[in-house]
Image 1 (spheres, rainbow, N blue to C red):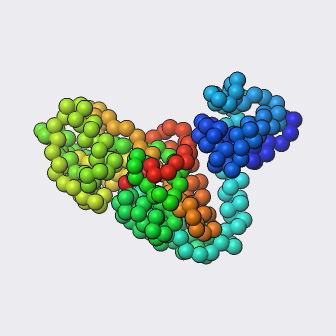
Image 2: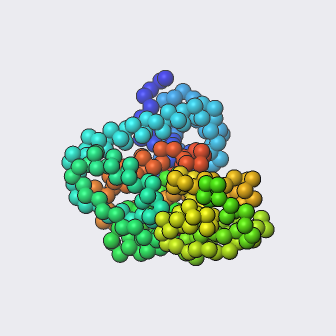
Image 3: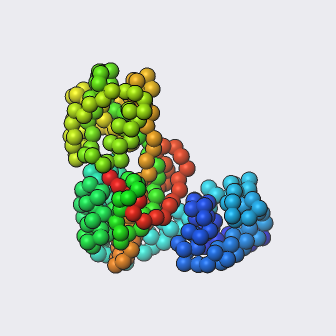
Length: 307
């Protein structure tokens, strides 16, 4: 190894792999495109290997680049965690998190507990609501950071969105239940316009499976209650289902469902140091592994997230 692999060069390398665009990475790092290309050249010189095939227009990794990638991600994760830990005792203030109650139920407990241990002087309050309302609250300055599901056309006008991970959607029903065998199949859904609902009903229609809406609820607890009573089947992300419910596989007669992206929103203007550290804490924790088994990635965009 000719020279040390600098943190800043590794960060540019990982961002290029994840964003697949020199233009976007240059914008994210507040650099010019030639400067980004020069950083990759410096990293390749330090590694003594080519990391991308041919040029940066196609962004295909060489075998050596594939080898470096997981190490680069691990180094960056440890570096950022160390920085956060060293500065945690100096950070104080208040942060407001917006989050649909689905994510509040299974993502927040561990995330909030670990953040409280690391940042005991920061007070976090949570606003649970539908994502359209959370986006409006962020634009009004009432929410600093939010977790949401990506859906085109919904998101804060004053915020940036970062992809945290993908989660696979699944059908759920009561243990030993038969709701999925009824015709038409009774389904309990979130309100009209919700991404889970739209994807589930589209899959049923495409597969030619008859269905009827047995319940509409803004609360995940309400949907779970219908499923536990064997009054309907529901759709949730794979990690979110409750005790007493089982995933309904291909033999159930229900169609396969796609994955969705969990996004992190940050206010662009006026974000406090405490809120920025909280957002980074969520990134490090929630995006550490994709729930559907696909490789983690980040994507920065505007106005592309929803309940």
